[in-house]
Image (tube, rainbow, N blue to C red; front, top):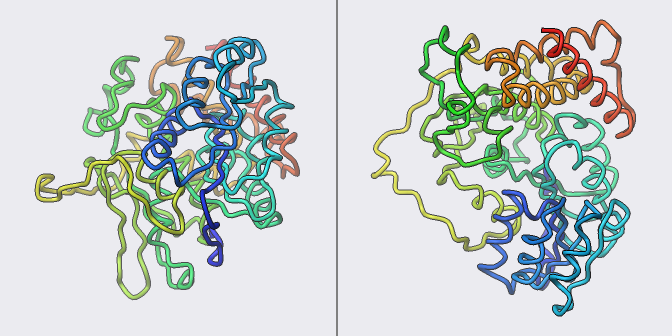
Length: 399
């Protein structure tokens, strides 16, 4: 299960480290801390290169320390915080050092494969990881969850769909779970004629109907590759088999996840499409807290609709499910190839439907080369990640 049934909140303020503080999840976590500052003691904020925003955040939440991954921004960060008492540092060694500081919780929201090492390093006995980095589970799920079990670490899912399932998944009745259902908006092309998808433009694909997100995740939502990643993550987070996972397209995005039980009960978590809800749930768990989030009004929504995803329209979803069944090597390749293909689409080098086609080619090429074997370390994962990226780049250049 994603979390231990015996885990409990510590007395007094929750001491917390935020990895990826200046990203969308990190900024939402800062909003929640600002709304109830007495609940938290911010040990450290870690960001990649945005020294100006990091300095502003560190002052807003009275952080003990602010750390940049990119050492080139350290002088600007240090200058901005010179008279505040906030300690500053930069570089990979500095991040690892701050992760050794006592803390109850680490929010792991560094984007991409860059988040693998620091999130793994954040695992300390008895600590809680509020996980928002999908690569930890998509590219290294077996390794990540095994290390969490070894360190007696509680993993709480921040992603809205997984957090929804976590809220309605009865661990004591896990053997009676029939199905775990993730919902998806269907993105901007849910009703677009399939033969028109090949001519989708960058601007059209970046218009998500419900959320404002980074470019890659917005495109992944449009292809439903992101939903495929979430299926893989759910497989690692919850004690279920591949065949117990399902996806429903739900355009209103009010129901975020459902769990069906053998007695016929179908439990659903509902909420406004706002990432601060699952983040606040994780940061207060196993309790609840007030958060600056609008309450939903079902009468105003009028209707909630659900439909099966069209796999001909969204081949990326099928690719993801097939990769999950092939194992961790395949899902690592899937993620790496997709990142390269999405970047190529955004740069105008390939078409929209070439994204899943490129990923499929790389998966086949990686299997022919014998690259999908079992990985025993994060170094193995990162090596495979690099090889998959090169395969995808080569394929795109040759087109």
